[in-house]
Length: 415
Image (tube, rainbow, N blue to C red; front, top):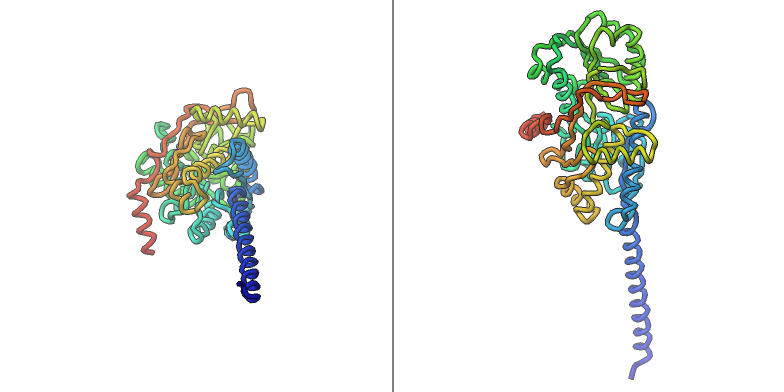
């Protein structure tokens, strides 16, 4: 015989069990919805100012990669999306936006930045918050003395690029040179690397002088006049974006092209917008060029032209490759757990316009080649590209050894 009080207790127990079951069911529904939500990639770069053309092509490379991935069902059964933030080419803005992506948007991984100051800023956030970050700036310290577990470089480094440019000077019978570079962290690192490698590979070339315009400089006439008076055999320039356009347009009336050889950054994002204002026979290096002779690049270029009705530039190629690097790592890891993604990035081999790339375990530098050659007019077009004596120098011939990387890190740790 069940007493009245016992009946009430049984009723309350039944209600409590029902409530707990409902909570568990709802929790499961919410958990399932969260797991089926999109995989989020936080992207940081500038679409305005000196890097406007770079940002435009980055958008296109990202868009094409996402369309391809999502057409195949996304990753782990989930859609892939990117959330963009403008770093305005400022370190403090990059820091703020990286934190916003992580804490407000809950992104799974970070990708981007094209300048040294913003790359350094986001690297600090990446290390502190333990989130994988594929950086697309070439500044050397990021994978050398300041490298850490969570940062991977998705382009060739300043050390690799400067070495490639030096190798491009070999056999040209130059005896004197002048350097001109923006006065900021990347500029100083790349000139130091250039001079060190020149001493090894082309010791016959003497540097007569150096010019250091500020990053925001638009009037290069005084620098050009100084170079013209010095009469070097070759000018080695590390100027990019709208600054490069201003420099070349101001140099032409002074006869710089006719009297002095030029060696500079010939990435298509820099030279293509100049059209016929550029020139033939300029010695150059590039992160990427449509002349890269790989089956994957031919497919990439065709698909890009079919989609956008123009040819890809370097930011299109490296952001496209960055998205696929992340995708390959997540597929390999089978999860969006950040530590698992880092582990997987150390093991992936990513088919991409470069053929296939991976990330070296000791410093997470990607195996990106550097394209060198001389400029020529693109057939049927009114712009230039690296079309003469073109070759891709493999990363393995250009990057510092792992021993050099570890020595640099130990030296930095003692400071």
